[in-house]
Image (cartoon, rainbow, N blue to C red; front, side):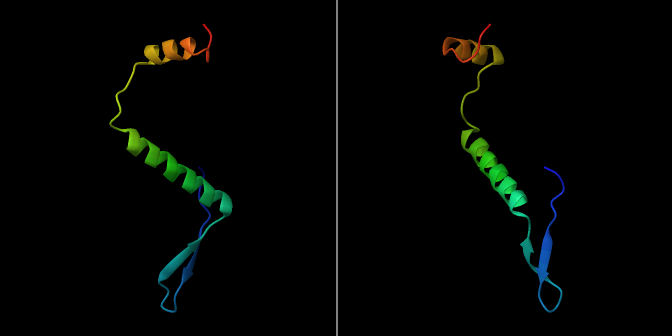
Length: 65
């Protein structure tokens, strides 16, 4: 993701109270947040080696030699 082009809304004292950003940036942030939550949910699952993954994908017909 590139630089986010945000704008801030401020109160009478100049304190930032809200942020406005382009929809595309907002959607990317939501997608990133979702990805991070999936990683957090799965962090305790057992891992497999790359070779094991390749064997499983081949067995399922998802990749070829």
